Length: 387
Image (tube, rainbow, N blue to C red; front, side, top):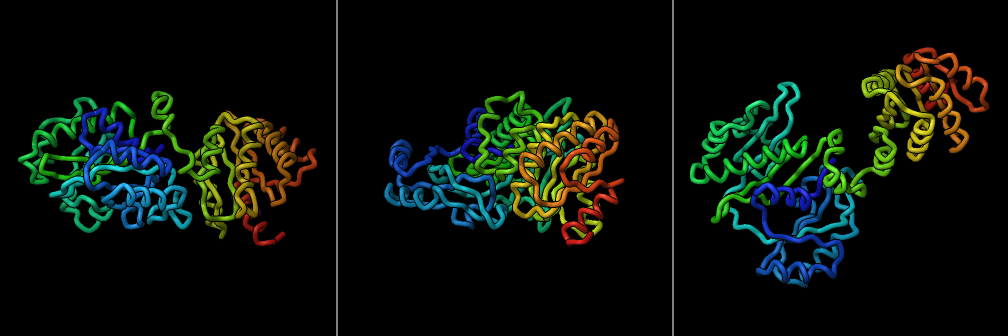
């Protein structure tokens, strides 16, 4: 789950990580109130979307009057911001952050994420702040400094000193050390998967986080109801948001063969074999190991809301989930939704014969497949209009 910049900065404040003063508006007539509360003579108006590259896309404006600020807010709210990370459709702007500007002397990068291969949280820092960290790693690897944190002992002072001296910030050693410690504490306390400050800037008054990006591990949200409540489904694909509500794992793709599979690994293999036989998957959809007929029916509805879909491949290996339940869900979905595209079904595992018998006795039109290879070939042939 992603947070907006203003939400991430609210967490930064809780953990004593310095951020600029600011306020959020979701309608133009709130602009004057925020400006009055902040004071000053210049302000930064920032569109709030779940994507980077906002500045280059016109999502960040510096203004010098209340009227100019209101005009900038009006130009953003209700629009879709297209950046290099959003795709052609862009992301809707429903909130705008207004902040006091900072007197920037130097821009740095500081972030942390989970390195699964090392089973450690890795903290990264760079003197090349303001750039995408991927570009820094590719073009200026010598400017990217990393430390791996042992989960037993946590972040150590000597590791903080390594970053301090690598960045040439001896004069800000105490503050940078404190920020790193607080960032690590935030990461662990809130079960984050990624946190970035880009840039972390040097000002005459010290260090300041003028941007903030936070991703939370969805699997830990049950422990953080307050953070789960911050989810902005307006920033998510409609189908992905609906799937989340029903406990389904769904990711939209660009192809025309929809997949419904139980198990993430099997879903990946299903998409791979569709590609192998010349097709293009329209989605990743894992209905889970303990799915029900109702969830299968809902999965069909979500799949069919994608107008690109020209065929559906159902690939179920019944372990925990029973094949007859899957068959019931398929029948229910076809009857309720009125499926008009070809449906190829491969069932294997628990109660497979009962599941196949249910499909055979029903009036729904499905194509049975003997194995995954056969299913993929039949799905690809269906979208090509072949028998």
